[in-house]
Image (tube, rainbow, N blue to C red; front, side, top):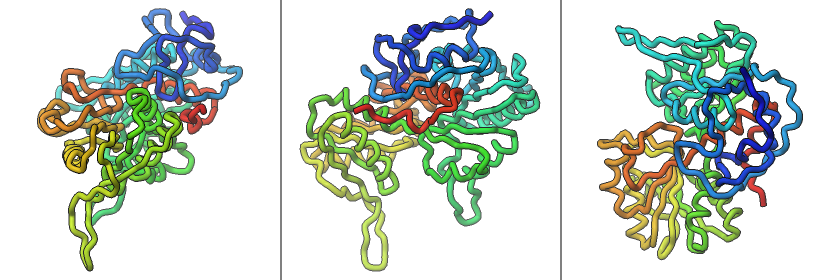
Length: 395
């Protein structure tokens, strides 16, 4: 029923990047060979179906070494909000996706059924919690697996819902912490997140539950390095004070890859006057004649993005690009609705942590696939290797 795959039959996974059409000896072959594989999975590992990838390999991975796990021990389950992304991750790991049925009862309550035995197995549950329904589905799936005697349960949450409610406000919940407590109560053993809004979210989980935060900025930096090759006037832009660290990390990776000095500017949302803060938008730095890349973690309604694009163009920017990990597009018309306000933007790059049909995005929004990044994180977890080392840039 199960077949092993030789070390040259899977493309190199490089921190969220799929290497063109080249094939190499896979240092994770021992891992992928020991992940559950079905002859009928119809896997074509040479590409991912959803999203863009880069042309070259940039990120180094240490060899895994010999694995002793049995082929049947590891299971990947994907919930509806991440079904397409899950299929691409499963292809890269030669895992049969699915094995989980999620539906609704007539009264609207959620039904979850795991289709095969998971007793004694290490289970990875992939789901972005973008809606209240998806949160309930994730919680019930983890509970089901725990009651079904799974050995371990790792929740992979590309987009962590309620992550922006991460601090105490007057008579409001700290919802990011509440979601963490719910996951713990259901029996999760470990958690993998992607570009959480605030690093404090990882601290909301108990000490005995490891939390890894995968950063997608280096992947986007590699993409823009290829797209803007030869442009020596690139400037990285933080859209507000809260994103300076994220933009700085992006800038560091871009500089390493491009081999040139890249300045950074930021947009201040407030102006200090004696005794008061005045809401405004003020650009700190010079962008005249420059190619700007705005770096953010979330695009929701798109208001901040469009305001910043307008400001940069007014200050003399030659071209403006934007990158955000999570594209929610909750405004009227979704992604397409943003286009009428993005005349000064070349394009917006987002990842596929949040699912959107291509026709919903319009012509100025591009999606970068994070499937290889997640696949490699799973491989390293199985091999008990460091996840934080995935995105080390190879000089």
